[in-house]
Length: 232
Image 1 (cartoon, rainbow, N blue to C red):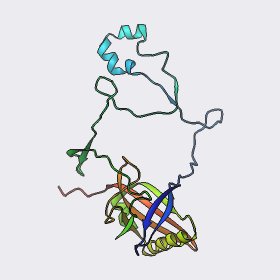
Image 2: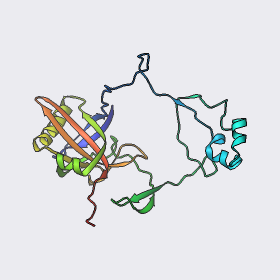
Image 3: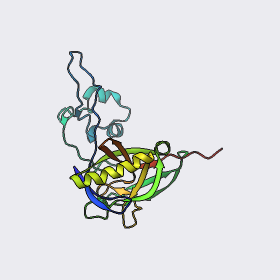
Image 4: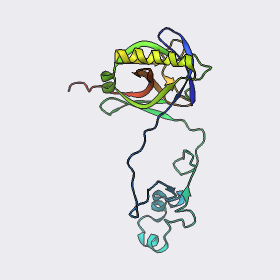
């Protein structure tokens, strides 16, 4: 369980835990024999046997391809893959170093507005960072569901009796108001949250639920806002 430094509406802060909760999978596929299926990764082709390389080498000479099977690397195709690492390649299939990433910006109607360099983000939720703060800006749950696409959710957890009361009070306040609270990082508490170095910057909202002396405080993250198209 990871830790986060967070403050409440009274500017009192504490270090608590947070973790993602995975839903139980109730649906699964079976083989004809009744066994449960699972996913595996295998090598489909190599760089030397990709469609682009074959087209450049053989063109429309399909007879040569049929006769010699150059599209199959019998030593590598079909091997099971375990750990994978992402690399960037140049146009000629070589490993690229010193890659400059570009972010494409789109308008609500899908047209591209422009591009900008992707900047390296720094995590701002660590215990050494300033506390994540309540901004005082609330939005109703129904409005938030229609306005934002929440891609990640984490449950905040207490680590002792004092932090139980701390988080319970936060959850109770939000549950009674039936609203989400925008939270932010940085010195002014208005910056989006970055969960790890190089990660995506998210706007974060807190949702509170209570049931008697039990509570649930959920941090929802979004980097996508839904907007209405202008009238034609």
